[in-house]
Image (tube, rainbow, N blue to C red; front, side):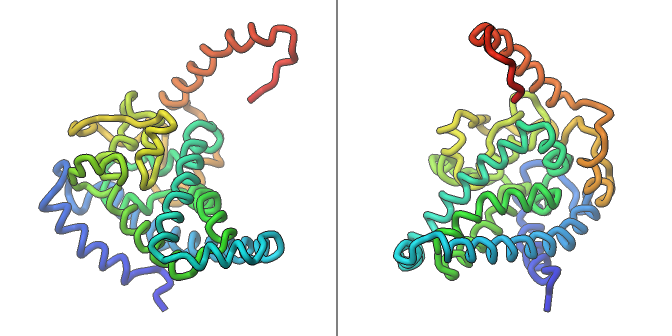
Length: 285
């Protein structure tokens, strides 16, 4: 049994490597910086996240059997597959959006998510480069409603295939103009500007598949056809896999520019808050 997904990795490599060579957004070597670490993420994270999803599904289905009326789960699971898949995409991406946004806005969570943003040369393998805690929490938030409501196994399988392929695509080093569909389908260009280490890109484009969620919630970054100057973060992310896994648990010795700027925004808003509640007890966020 291919528990590490080696066959799937080879198939993806045969698809993405030639296309990234022919239609590259920016010049980049196949054997680029951080490739070895990303391959370790593929092997270990894939196994860990799969095990976590199985546990999440089992516990959620058990809870749903006790809490959700059977007629609801039968109605949801009895819909046409295509409609179920569309609903799953919307439900999960709302979860992904808010989980992703929380990992950016809450300092303790950002230390986990900074590992993913530490990628300095972005390609399809970057999709696997996430701290296990980051990946598992996001999966739990986005998938729990799907298991809870009783979507069919077939629709979940179709969604999983679409989500997996699309996640690799948005991290790829490809230029794919989508025209007016850019509001509906996340492209590499859309997600590339989420990874850019430039002030105008910070805390923007949180959606995984549906960019209109960023439009609705005011976090969309329209960049036209421009290409980011650089990727990565200012945080002192270790170079090794185990160093990166341990990084969020270490005491921070240096504040990143992004954290400092977020702190400045909070301080600027404090006087207004205090004047509105001068007689109230201060409550920490």
